[in-house]
Amino acid sequence: MNIPLAQPDITDREIDAVVSVLKTPNLALGPKLPEFEARFAEHCHTKHAVAVSNGTGGLHLLVRAMGIGEGDEVITTPFSFVASANCMLYERAKPVFVDIDRATWNIDPALIEAAVTARTKAIIPVDVFGQIADFTPIRALADRHKLRIIEDSCEALGSTYRGRPGGSLGNAGVFGFYPNKQITTGEGGMIVTDDEDLASLCKSLRNQGRDFMGGWLDHPRLGYNYRLSDINCALGIVQLDRLTEIVETRTRVAAWYDAIFASDARIVLQQPHPDVFWSRFCYVVRLADEYDVTHRDRVITALREKGIGCSNYFAPIHLQKYMVEQFGFSRGDFPNCEFVADRTLALPFHKLLSQKDIVRICDELGGLL
Image (cartoon, rainbow, N blue to C red; front, side, top):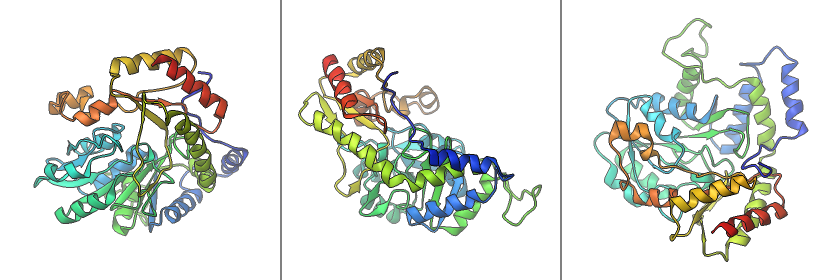
């Protein structure tokens, strides 16, 4: 692709930070890990942060640490990356999907109440493409039913809801640092929470079940290797320090797209919630109602043939083969999700794009519709 879909924003500062760690004996479990965690907790206005190997691992650890297991139900959205549902399957809990709002593409708070049962233990709202879910009604419902909230903020670093940072709105939140995210550590993720006991348990679980004061071969509980190395943390520290700059650049690229699409009736944009400052993970549009999945897929093929990276963010989770086989989901179960997913198109979105690139992308897309 001569215009790739995504590209990390790496400078000499990040390279120098990584090289400096490589010159020390502390490649893992060294000083950069607690430094990254402390800085991240400060950014999110939370008391604790726990660095992990990826966002998926962070979600899994929270499900495990909250005691969610076989027979339990967790409410979430079907319009997301599969990790937000897989994390409960790892513990043999059941994902209970609630349809989305067609404007924001986030879980529809008005539909959640009907999905609550005696087995419901938690809600996992997803901040889709960086747009934070509408937390005021979600929080009120969770409090009413005594449910935990795990905020999947893997795509929302830098976003805020009523002035509060993404990730800090539930009992705990999770971020991901894959190379297409706002910041990257290569691979990596972060749990944030104000709950000291939850943070301590997650730190143990990520490190093979070891306790903080125990020996290397002392494992009081079953754990996992979800650690993040000092090499990754050094990269993350610099990226986090540059977050404001990175978000400003991405916002400018999004504004170039918005200005072109504002007058194009063939394109529908994800609508921002008025209480959200939106730090975008990616730039996704929806084709207008008269188009269908066949049209969208033809557009993707044609754009890729022209050297323009694009994708179909997201495919409905409930229609994934393993979900259908295990739970019997079928098309029509979540019509808003399916309607949006059939028509969504992720376009190139990263720092290296020029305004000329955006004009070319939009011209090529327009010529295909």
